[in-house]
Image (spheres, helix red, strand yellow):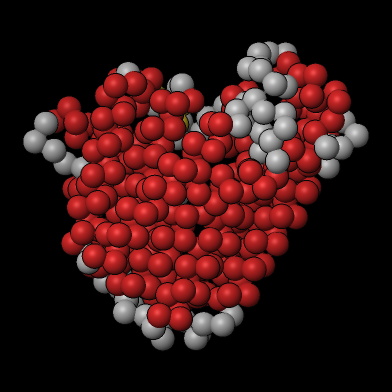
Amino acid sequence: MTADLARVEAQLLESVRSDEDFLTEIASHLITAGGKRVRPGFCIAAAATTLAEDATASAEAVSGGVAVELVHLGSLYHDDVMDEAEVRRTVDSVNARWGNLRAILAGDFLLARASELAADLGTEVAGLLAATISRLCEGQLLEIQHAHDLGRTEASYLRSIEGKTASLLSAACRIGGIVAGAPRWQIDALTAFGRSYGMAFQLVDDVLDLVATDEQLGKPAGHDLEEGVYTLPVLHTLAGPDGDELRELLGSPLEEPARRKALDIVRNGDGIGCAIDAARAHAAEGRAILEGLPPSPGATGLSAAADYLLRSVEAAAA
């Protein structure tokens, strides 16, 4: 996988190359800042579920992974504009360094390049990626609609994260199965695993935003809470014995020391544990789906990723 992800890295940089050097610089900013490359890794691993032993990923699996990662990066450019974020992956966000207009255009450029790659992989992949971008927008819009909403429901939160996060991880797995020529039942199983993992992934990310340090996150801790994005740990806390105290602080933008006090209330309540339990349930669902696939390096790797995800949040929350 290490060699395959190195190929992903090289193709990412090549895919954002433009005749305009300035656009190349902006478009490659977060690529060179690093990243776990979870989505391309899942695309490659999903393709490897058709193999009996370790083998080099096909060019199509790498290209599919690059396309999905470009969509992810483009969404980050747009998210940072909406959040007025200043830091991303320990470096200046694109909007902080070059302004909102350039960040929006560069994000659009990344999405366009992703679409070009998807088109080269066939009409099914192209249509899937287009539909996934639509779902990302729907999930993000639902989140914006409920900013600072003390009445936000758990159902609304889950619909939002299914759109803005799980849909892309699900698409990554589905694309891997498609380009590998897997049977349709296996492609559907990989798609379902990607959704389950994606739900767990966002739940874990939302917990880490509340319990991890700025250094661990590569951005300020508690940013979602500050911006009025009330995630599952916050919603559970609002419904619990500390709900009244927390409700007095929320409902509008937070400043210090109110942000710190709100963080402490959530950290000391049972909302964190409830969200981790929900992540465990989604991860277990995903592992059960993988057990129905033939043994392969890809299935082993995907299952290990689910285990690692839970270990990371359990350690941070301990």
